[in-house]
Length: 536
Image (cartoon, rainbow, N blue to C red; front, top):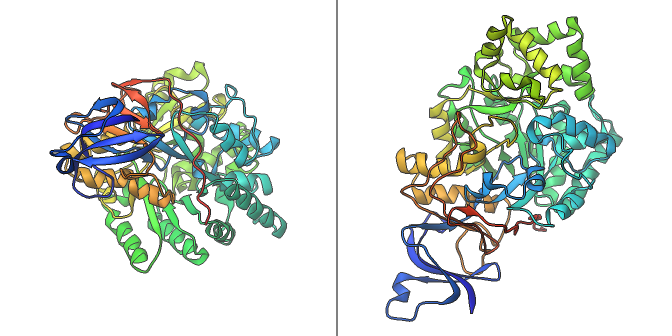
């Protein structure tokens, strides 16, 4: 007898088709049969060792978070309810060009410092890997949700070139090609970049094109955080479209937004650019989060020249008054490339987390508010935070536009991604709320998407980008990564004031056919594993 039958569910299968009522039978981690209500009439209904009454609940594929920063959280926190409670059963990590494999000892130490604000320093995790394959093997020991990995281009450049702002030599480019190829051979699904983060931003288009050719040869995709989401954003998007066209590589645009005052109301221009490319045969997808503010580290706003030499180079420059004044001028007057070419507005920069306990009173205030409370100018406060927190400060940037968010999420190439940083006292609520916020606010309350459309954006469409032949749909033979939610009550509990509140209306989540969330409570199931690239 099979393990589980989910009885009388309203199935939204991920295809975009209308929902239907059915009994769904799960065994051995897969969906073994689907008996629709019409087919069940007058005949014996399926039985199993356990029955789950899904009356009034929607059954859909588990949600795929196309942009996650859980690289260490998956190992640090076996519970991982921040994502499981949302119905997420697969995360794509290794984002924004900086992560922890492939590395050598030097690069690992540098990367740990550079992205402390994203993931913590990692001194509470045994970082006992160096290659992509070893990292994926570590995930295979058992994690809360499944995880796919992108080779981080910035980390690769740090290994081959260092943190200098210069073109790669021929030998260095060859080494980067080999590192990317090895990562893909070991199971990575593609390549990520952070082109407003050092050292990845030091790569020119020719270098990136060569790496994308390697990615294309292995059937992966390129996922850039491109060079600007502010001034010149459309040109930055067009640059990525053209670069991947030349390389013959699929493109997935990370956290696709049009932010800052210069881009208010300009999402239709971006979507027209993408539609022209799609109509010409390009393979393009994108992800977005359903909120207006962004989130990053305070150090990410600094100009690229200040990042040469890595984290220690930044701290050395900030300690020198004359150089620090030059940094201030770039930030406040010129418009730093780290701040997307837009002069920083300190009253839009909210401090969301610090690593040094002595700085905790800054959290929840804007830089300007914190400066005013101390009777100093905002740059003095920001500089002190950067130095005393050793670059570990995270921020929210309140620079987005609701009309742009809504327009982008309607697009035919759209998928969902939280871009959720789980560290800090007051993280962005998207880390805990992205997927129920789509379903509760943008489907039920605002009607921006239908339920069937939204589920397709969060399941089948990202599974197709990842080239996963047995995930993303409720189909016989597919893996039983499933979520059951109440369409009338599903909602994000996380707010900017209380960002770690778990969502409502998602009582059951199955990973590999096992209940990881049952009756709204986390079980001890660790059925997640590394999801490796499907060979071409």
